[in-house]
Image 1 (cartoon, helix red, strand yellow):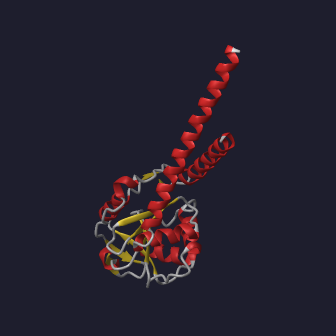
Image 2 (cartoon, helix red, strand yellow):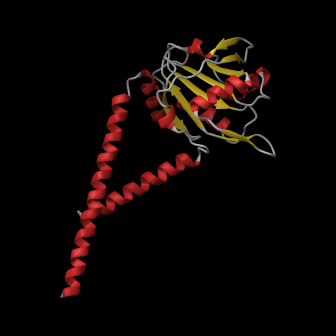
Length: 234
C-alpha cells in the first residue's frame, strides 16, 4: 500500500506537469464550463477567394474553428502546421468535417489570407476567411478566445482550436500550440457525438483514481502517525 501511495503521487505529479505544459502554451485559457454546448453566433465572412458566406452555411458537418492573425509568427503558424499534420486520416476534409481558419486582426484582408494559404500549402477545402470586426468579436466571445494588442507589434492571444458539432454547438477544445493526432480525432468524435461516452468514462476514471490516491495517502499518514506515537511511548 505504501509503494502504491508513492507511485500514485508520482503519477499525479506527472499529470500536473503535462497539464501545465499544455496550459502554459495557452494564454487566456477558455472557461469551458461557460462555453461547452453553447451555439455559435452566425457571422458574415469573406473567404480568401473573395466570396462572402455565412458561418451557418457550414452547418451539417462537424466544424473546426482556428482563430489567427495573418502576420503572427510565434504561435499561429505552428498551430496551423501542427493541425495540418494531425488531421484524421480516416476522415476527409470538406466531406466529413469542415475547417475554418479566420482572422481576428481587423488589418487582415483577402490578400493576406491568400498569402497565408500559400505559406502553409493548405488544401482548397480548408477555409480561410476574414470578417467584420464586430461580428468576429461576437464569435470570439462565444469561443472565449481573448487577446490583447501589444505595443511593439501584433497580439498576445489564446492558443486553441475549437470543435463544434453539425449544429455548431461547441463540443471540444484543443488547447495549446501542439496538436496531437489522437486528440484531434477525439475532438472530431466529440463533434460527431461518437466520443461522448469515452470522454465521460475518462472523467469518471480520473476521479475514481484520484479518490483512490487520496484514500491511499490518508491511510499512509494514519499508519505513520500510529508508528510515531508508539515510538514515543516506548
